[in-house]
Image (cartoon, rainbow over the protein chains, first blue to last red):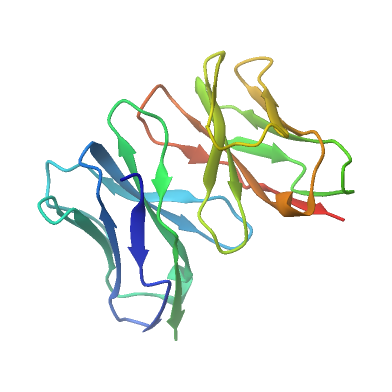
Length: 112
Length: 112
């Protein structure tokens, strides 16, 4: 119930393509779903986050789609660039708590 | 710029030799976290401080301890490092409960 399942484990996309990473959860008490971007040797940085009262949130080329009934959410990166090559982690958190439950991560490589 | 600073960035220690990792923040956040991230894995929360209150995760080994002498600083002590403790250690902060976490760059610990 505490897990967040993330797929795929790795992803290769051509420059200009769309990168899609999916996450699923079981615990309906989760009410905050962030995505973090991590470059090698760096700490994770918050990319975009969503709460379950909306179905989609867009910030620039990054969009979160959220399906509450299916308990799934996904990150879409439009017009993917080589500079987007990084590891992406989805996460979830219960309301009023501090602990983030991370997915296993997706290593994205965008080829020029 | 307000930030989370970790020192040192790279730490080498010997099996069984105590080691201390340092985190400081200029964000004036009242919550500070320590995560362990092993190679190609998601960050795993070890413990966090909410103000002066220490919150240990149930599965954090006793070998890991923490100190928070003031709002700005937090230390991770590993009393007797084993080879399995080699990892990236990430410090994060947040303002209050349930808000965005800001991560530091991490300290990569090597155990010989």
